[in-house]
Length: 255
Image (cartoon, rainbow, N blue to C red; front, side, top):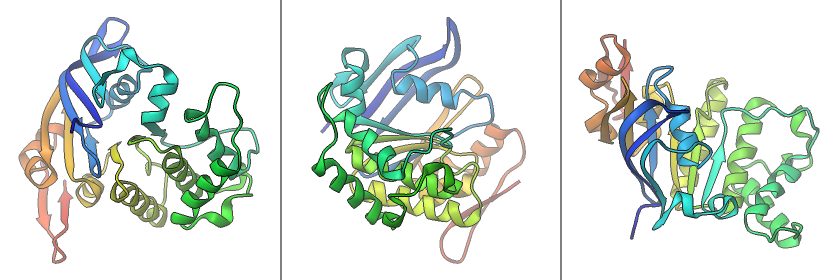
């Protein structure tokens, strides 16, 4: 079976100026792939290119067997969900309304979400333990609660692949743990998740594989324990990095 998401010899950038070149990656069902790199390395540009929001400058992106440019926006949304770093909106949507917006990926151009879509949305929220937030106004929710709603929306959308751009960047410790568990739940349910993070410890805790990008291209990609070494992370961030194995088997990194 082909990967959910695949990039081959990808060059991405803005206009004609490349930021990352020669990037290759695959995303498989049931895995979390963590993208690490310093600020300005091009992680967000790479994600926008993987979603078809920016044209690639070279190489190709495929969703399953289909080349990305051959797919409509509706087709892409049915296969690929997106969770941003944070949700900001001036509109007081209820959480359930925001959830039902994901149903547009499965409905016809003029169709409205019905009972089945609402039940699907509520089931996703219940799975993450946030069913009690369904009627709450999104503007009144905490950052962690909003991220949980966005992840539940990705679940309800039913896409096989999920892209997350630093989904825990602005959260406190407790909410990072909650959102991390929700991300793992999404993968355990069969989705493939690719997320960017600045925290090597988070990548080690959540990720099955890691992709390190910097200096205009990919430095390494593979299993977390094999790729995230002191040597590769020191090269990536430009500072000495040490790796420790904790008593529970978890990897921990120090500068």
